[in-house]
Structure formats: structure tokens, C-alpha cells
Length: 115
Length: 111
Image (tube, rainbow over all chains, first blue to last red; front, side, top):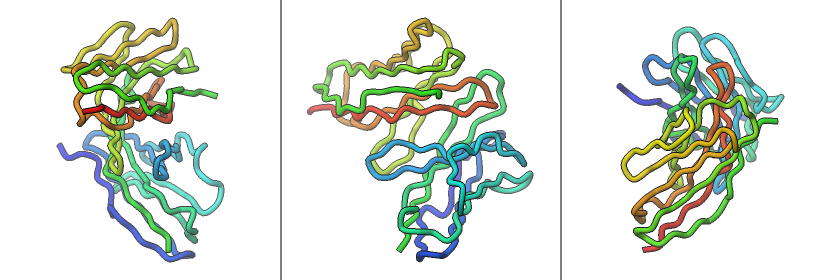
């Protein structure tokens, strides 16, 4: 059973370009989280999605950031017009559809560098 | 606002001793509790889940949950240098509520 797959592992973008980060959840998992982490800092929640639905986007910046989890295909975190401050590690985690458990499994992350 | 609190550390423990990591949470409705380990430059790795009051053991790890006190702990017996990492505590309710993470405790095992 493959784990959570994120790609690319490393992404370099110039200021003003768009960054697209992809996350394929574990087989059978229906929910996806996105987190951002700066070096030596904690995980910062961004968004929590299920297929075709955003459950909680309270951590998403109001501008330039969007996320989706379509019926088919991976979840996408999209950052438009990137700035240097967007440089960070972006982690995706997936969790199964169970009433009593929310345990989540993380992908390897995408390291975004804005130059 | 729902919060999970952890001491940021660093917590230094001699090799072979017991490392004790603690966490408190604010939402009494929380039902699921997790400990993750994160090595520098790597992604968090789930090491323990606990759902009921009491202790749960897995190898050298023991998770303890006290819902009345809203307190979760992780004990690591026979600490090894490879246990040096940041340990994240997390709490969840149900599938429609996101997991809340603490900021993590840095653990340093002294050889």
C-alpha cells in the first residue's frame, strides 16, 4: 500500500510565477490536509478537504492561495504570483473515512523555493 | 479556540533513560490523540494513537491519556540517540473536524 505521494519534492519558482503542488492520498483515504512549515517552526494548518469539498480553510491566506481535491486525481495546492515569503516546506497528509479516528499520514513534502 | 500545548524544549535526556513528553489540550470534545515524530528536514511520522483513558504501549513507547485532566503524555524507555527529534502532539474529534497540532517538543538524547 503506497503512502501519501507528493510531487514535486523540490520546486523552484521565480517571484510572480505560479506554484502547483500535488498530493495523492493513501489508497482508501478520502480526506486531505495541507500544512506549511518554515525551518525550525511548527506545522501551520492551511486547509482540510474531502473529495469535491473544502471542510476547513481557516488557515489559508485570503489571496493567491487555493486548494482543491477533485473527484478524480490528486489534491492540488496552488499558489499564484509567488513571493519570497512563500518559500517553505508544504506537507500533505491524508486520513481515512472513519467516524472515530482522524489519524493522518504525511507525505514527504514539497520544498518550495522562490528566487 | 482549540489548542494543543507542548513545552518547546529542548528536553535533554541521557541515553538509556526514560524520556517523558507532555501535552495538554483545550477542547473537551477531543476523542483521538496522536504522537508524531519529526526529524529535521523530514516529514512527521505517526508513532502512536490513543483513544481511551489509560496507557497504551508499543515497544519502547507508551502513550498515556487522562481525559479528565485533558492531558496526554508519551514515554520513551531506553532512550537512544536516534530518538532525538521533535515530537508533535495532536488531538482530533471526528472526520469533519481537523486535527489540531501542538508546536512540538525538541528531544535531545545525550550519548
